[in-house]
Image (cartoon, rainbow, N blue to C red):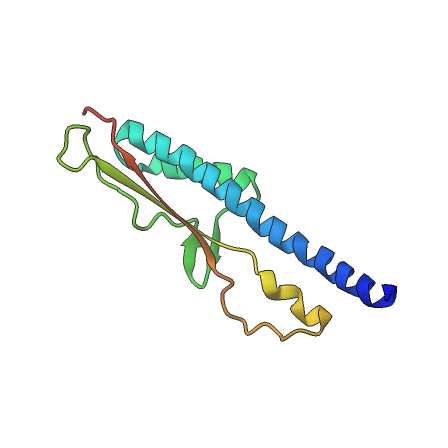
Length: 136
């Protein structure tokens, strides 16, 4: 009985490590994005200075600038890139942060699972909304 349970417990304990890393990286990206949104709310848009400071924070976490399939990451496509004033009819600011996620299924072939098809493992895509506090 013990010989059957031990491999199962070993497999489960090894599979939790990549999932934990994936979850912790998502938490860090979300925290950095929330800080960037607070900065963007103060100035009224996602400025190049905010993007640069966010990139530096991500780089300190080991998630620096990379190019994946010809696209640079982190990507801010979809973020508000023009100044929105506090008194505007729609004072909403959007922050969109996209970064490649780690490949969770990379270790399946080591335990007899299917080989990776080479597809993307996916992306962290954080989409946050805030209200502009900029007067001018």
